[in-house]
Length: 107
Image (cartoon, rainbow, N blue to C red; front, side, top):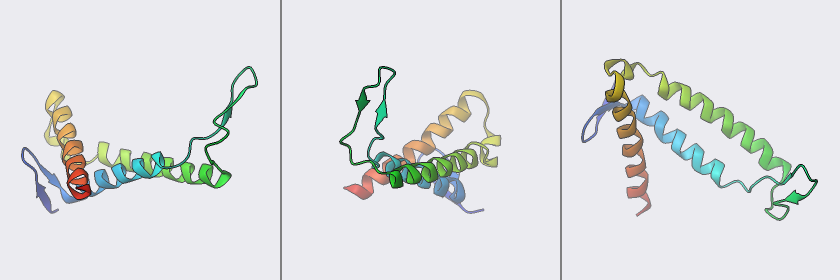
C-alpha cells in the first residue's frame, strides 16, 4: 500500500483518494438546487429554486456514494494504529490535508 506524506501524518493513498472523492461528492451535492417543500400549514417553500425530479435522483445517488465513502474512510485499517484523541486528531489532519489540496488547486 503506497503512503502519501503529509506534514504530520503519512496517509495511505487509498484513504486519501476516498477522502478526496468524499469532498468532491459533497461539493456536487451542494450544487444541486434546494428541494421545494410544504410545511405543516400547507405553505410551499423554495418553489423557485429550479429543482427537478432529476435533481432528486442525483441527490439519492450522491447520498448513497457519501455513505459508502464515509464507511470506507471511517473503517480504514490505518486508523487502528491510533487510539482516543490521537485518532480524532489524525482524522482531522486527513480532512484538512484534502481541503488544503482543493484550495490550492482552486487558486
